[in-house]
Image (cartoon, rainbow, N blue to C red; front, top):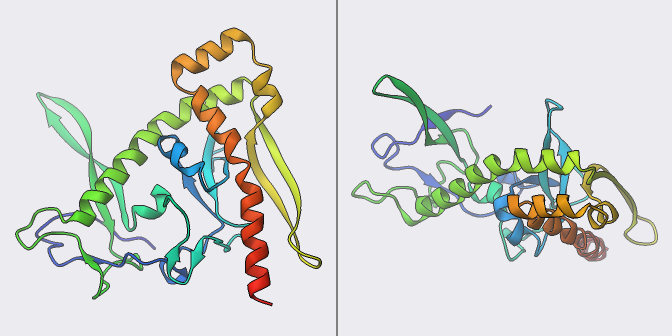
Length: 244
């Protein structure tokens, strides 16, 4: 269970966070949430796919890391073998929460940073410090803040974008049977992706509307990311070969 606390430079002045990668940190997962604000980076390494959210009211995007629930093909001897680290991983034990504030009788909710004190990265003696000795933000925390801002902006952008993709019929199921070697096969099920033919067949007015909304780029980035499925299969084959 997570145990979140509002990050404070006095309460957490000695907080250290491990920055390596491995199953011990919860990194052995087959997919992680992805956000439109990082699609241009993710497309270099990862397939970007969609799933219905838990409420069934919309869609969430994911960067595919492997073909099994606990398979991360980017983990290599304590490092992350890719040019870009997904924001969901980079944020570590931190997340954005919202704190109520009242200004001239009007209640607003301001984003604030929380830390999960039960996260396996928290409290590592050899971890990086979150705060400077004088109480200011350390370089690691500054990096995390930038990542959290990107995630926050991405969450805001995602819902209307995916809703429009759905309205236009661009979201279609992905079902692939995969052959990794002579004896090992796999399946990719349960995800959805942008349909190339439907995107190409959109009416001019819909294309213009997507472009003006800034969502057309997102559709094409998701579509282009599907080529990374073959690269992920190659990683799987190399891993199987290394295991003999």
